[in-house]
Image (cartoon, rainbow, N blue to C red; front, side, top):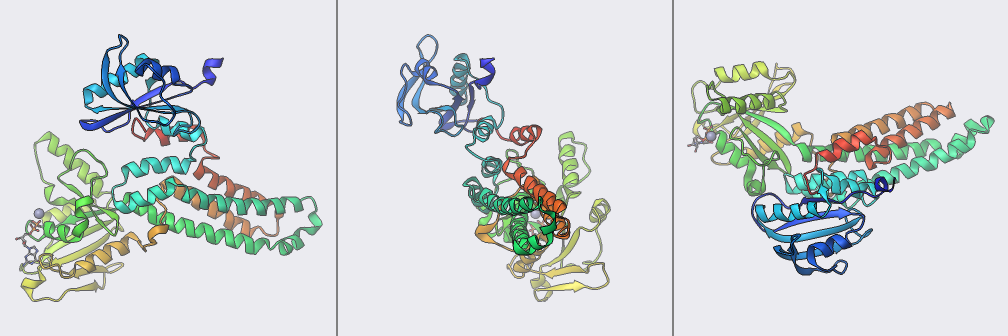
Length: 457
Ligand code: GDP
Ligand code: ZN
């Protein structure tokens, strides 16, 4: 069946919905010269901008703009790619897209362009994922890290470890045929020191990947406090100058109860519980229910109290009901604000008696004193120790694969007397790492990964 061998032509609007100076429709397929000719009346030169009208079946212009043709294999997907740059209005973009469908394209699924790039060997899986991560990055640090993965830095490190594993496996498997030499072999080949080197590299990657996971998903902070204790003031101080480039990860709708700021590039999702109240309004109730679900996923609870108020240590009703729904083991920090009014000094006090010791920070949000203490405390809880350029923007699935590989390396180290088991653990470690780059990845997992992309990417 020749039709099954040739992938069909896909098309999608690649620019964000809404109005813009320009809008782009992207088309990918096996061969698009005829397609281009039908759309523009002539075939553009490869990789040269061609100004042209985009015409309908009757030859009437739908729009005019730039057509770019990237012939296979030197394109993003590895197939023929056309990029139609027209005027960025929602209606004209839809009309251009409809024209492409009329010419035989079908609407691309989310992530389908990137999926084709992966299947055609233009990107490995970790790089493909970093495309989505770059688009979704909520801080500049996350974006930088994503672009490093996109350029293949993460994949290269994985490949280097895999290469070292393969070398070791080849040695071991060559020896398996001569069982009487097994023990000497391990000595001669320096198998154990080599295994240790591999483990060290893997541990370093895992550590930097964990830091990256933090950059990706950030920390959920629940802010508790009576009106006027200084919650907004503290948020402003924490956000500092970076505030302007912070966006909400979830994107579109701004949630009044949830705000994202960043500290050293780590997104902090702050849930302001001041908005949690009994209400008859359905929409508001849905928002509040969602907030509760986020509270249940909290990493830290920041309780703000007013140092100048008489009843500093009474627990307000609201925070008691919040306490009741909070998961155990969540770190709790009390921030005593307005120390300027109470004549207190900034500082960090560990309260004895509590399990793990509760921490109390004395600050003035208005004057900015003690804010560094809050910042440092949040970074400590996050487990952040900055690696700067080395951070790997990992996903949960990468962490999982790295941990699995490390476990197999450790099992191998424990099997040094049984060469066959040693070899098998090395093989399994290699397979785990292969999941990251996509060499050993099930089709259904690929489906899940790419379905989370936006359409047109
Ligand atoms: P929220 O209702 O908890 O968000 O509190 P706000 O941040 O809006 O602050 C309430 C009032 O307290 C404002 O007038 C702030 O200027 C003031 N305030 C906040 N922090 C301090 C502080 O550290 N010292 C003093 N003196 N006033 C503060
Ligand atoms: Zn406020």
